[in-house]
Image 1 (cartoon, rainbow, N blue to C red):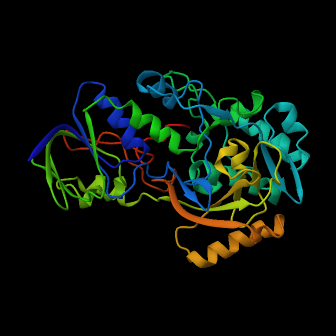
Image 2: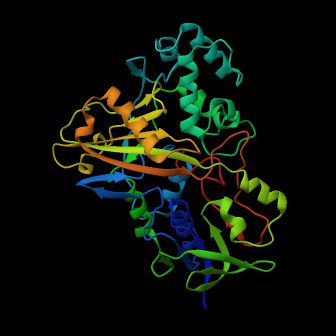
Image 3: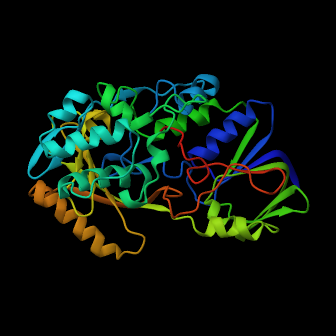
Length: 402
């Protein structure tokens, strides 16, 4: 039986970053991935001459966040990021820039004046009790933000998500974080899109692995994480691998199927985790239609949508003279695939007629392993089994880039 210092289960972005950091400590690392590709939901691939990502992305906290810290410490090749620029709000047939400052909030005419005053008072008092008489447009505006930030409705979104420590530093006094930042800053200055697409981040990690310290095996389905009092081996469909430590980056809610001896209360928490689901529609346009930089929040869309003119950030993602754009939609837990696709695409056609005459590509994804809701479970990095640790968006409520 081959033996390694550490076995990492899952070759998504969390697993690959873990393998990189551990291998830099002079440890031998084996990465096991059940799919035939690596990168998980952080990769790119070709479709009819266009290069699409696994869903539209903006990488956040590029100035001082955890991804910046990892890149500075471990990457031999640092990805280049194109500024993401403004975000726009589209509702009621109108479109305006997202209000990034107090003055912008006060002049944000897409929402009623009274609602704007109430929201500013609410944000500065760090309250999360919405007035009952806010307009439908304002409620949908806030609901959109909650769905795309924590994958749940405004009624189920925890206030902690909006008082997150944006500087990624431990402090006895939490800063008011992301929503406060909307009020005092001039745009999302630390957000960007990776030049070359998401795949370039994965490629940068792979090229930064120390020589002969990391081995990746694909199409390796893990059946059991063997343990007595501590982790000793990982069993796949065709081999067993000895190890001192396991880093698990798969769905933490699947752990009870792989590990014996977990406490009942711990299992109960894991089984209450709700995964975030999305539908992305990529459109390869025959010409360059969208000229401005910046994404759009489609508040009136049903389901809610986020539009990104992706190839505006990197023209190499589309053939010369053409354009690649993406539309991300929230997706309910229970849904009919063909119905949700039709419903979402109809919303696009309502706003952009005749777009169906171009290249269309659908993706149904799980961009976050867990939604962050008041009534939902959530995992943790440390679990009650010695030498077994978990990483990923269902174990840490502040994702790597955001």
